[in-house]
Image 1 (spheres, rainbow, N blue to C red):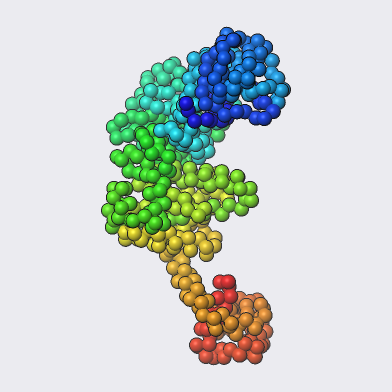
Image 2: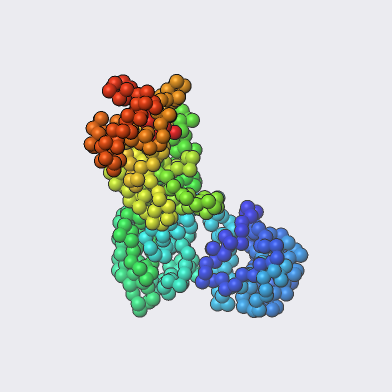
Length: 511
C-alpha cells in the first residue's frame, strides 16, 4: 500500500483541464492510499479513491453513502448534480464528461504511487516546473524520454490548445510531435544545454515555445518545454533553462534526487543535504566528506551567503518564501556551474563554489535581483574570502554571516569591500570584554556632544571639516569641544586619549 497522500495531490495530477468541481464533506477530505475503478454495487477498500464507471449524474452520487461506510476516501464521477459543500459523506470530484477512465486511472495511480510525492525518483520536478515558470515567464511542462509528462506548472487561461491536450493526455499530442520532427526540433535538443526556440503555429493552436533537453551523459532523460503566454520570455530564459535542465537530470537519473545542490553531471547523483551541511558547519570530518564528494581535501572554495531579509510576520508565508528562494537559487546555481554546493543554515542560503569562484559576485547580483523581483523581499548576498581547503569552509561561513550583519546597502558585498570594518568589529569585541573600558568617559556625554566628538575625531581634528559635516558654525563646535573636555575629562591634544575616545565611541555604536 502506498503511503497516504492528500486529495490536493491527486487534483494536481489531474490538472485544471480535467477537474470541473470538487465537493468536500464537513470534516474535510480523507487521506488517499489507493485507487479503484468500480461499478455501482462494488465495494471499495478503505482509503481508496473510487472512479465510478458505468454510472453518471445522480445515479453515481448514490454510491457515496455506501462508499463512505466502506471507508473510501473520495469519489470521482462524470457530470451530474453538484451538492453543496459539507452535504456529502466523502469528497466528490466531478471531472470532464469526455475524459477516458483509463487515463484518469493512470493519473490517479501516478499521484498515489509516488510520482508526485517526495518519495519518487522525480522528487522536486513539480516545484522545479513552477520555479522555471516564474523565472522565465511562461507555462512549463517536463517530459521524460518517452514524451510522457512527469511534471508541469500551474495551467491557467493562457494555455494554448497543444498544452491543454498535453496535460489532459499526459503526453505531447502526436500531430504536434510530427511538426517538431519536421522542424528538426528534437535533433536540436541533443546535445543539451542549448535552449531551442520554436515558432508559433496558429494552424494547430501552438504558441511560441522554448525547449531544452535533459541528458545524463549520452543518455537522453527528457526535455523541458515553456509555452509563451501574453508576455515575452525573460531576458535570461536560456540561462534559467540550462540550470533547470541540469537539476532535472539529477532528479530524474536515480535515487538521492531530494538534494538541491548541483553535483558534477558525470556523477548523476545529487549531493545529500547532510553532506553539504556538514561541509558548511564542520560537524563532520572534512577529509571524509571530501572523499564522499569526489573532492580533494585541499580543494579551494568560495563561500557566499544569501539573506532574504524577509520582513513578513506570517510563519507559513515566510517558510514558503524560503523554500521558493532555495528553488530559485538551485536553478541559478546549476546554470552558473555544474559543481555549486547549496544548502540552508540558520535561515540563510549558503553556496560553496570550488576553485577561484570567478564571476561569483556578478552571478550573485543576478540571483539577488531575481529573488527581489520574484519574492518581494530585499535579499542581499555576501561573499567571504576564498579558503584554501575544505576544512576552512566553516570559517568562511562565519565571515559571510558577519558581512551580512554589517547591514550595508549594496545587494552584494564581498570581503574585499568590508575587510577593515570586520577587523574593527573584532577589535571592538575585544575592547568590550574589558570591564574598565566599557565604563568609558564618553558615557558622560549627551548624544549631541558624542556626535560632535565623533565628527571631530573622524576629521582628524580639523574643526572646519567637522563643523561642515555637522552643519554647524565652527565656533559652535569649538564650544562643544570645550564642554566635552570639561564633562569627560578628555585631553583632545593627547593622541592616546583621542584613540581611546574613538574606540569608546565606536563601541557605543557597536552596541
